[in-house]
Amino acid sequence: MKGTTALKHYLWAAGFLVSLTLSMVLLAKAVQTIPIGTAYPIWTGIGAVGTVLIGIFFFNEPATFARLFFITTLIISIIGLKMV
Image (cartoon, rainbow, N blue to C red):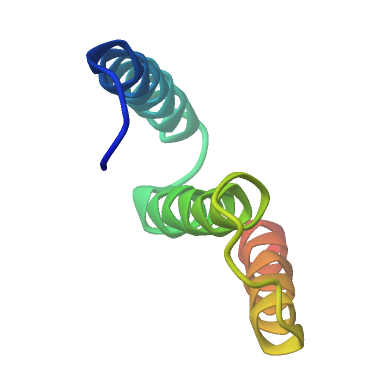
């Protein structure tokens, strides 16, 4: 990444570590009440949706109809899996 400072890299790394820690703590808490076979797919689905949204809002990735359609489908699937 041309033109970025070391501080910017450290801030991204710190944000990643905080997010990773929080994510793992919440996954561990979730498996105390729901089976791992349900918790893990929900956890990864939420991460996938979050990653796509960050790409769209912060990195100017395209928000095409197909992309939004499949993200919506993934969200509906996550909700359905939790309800089953």
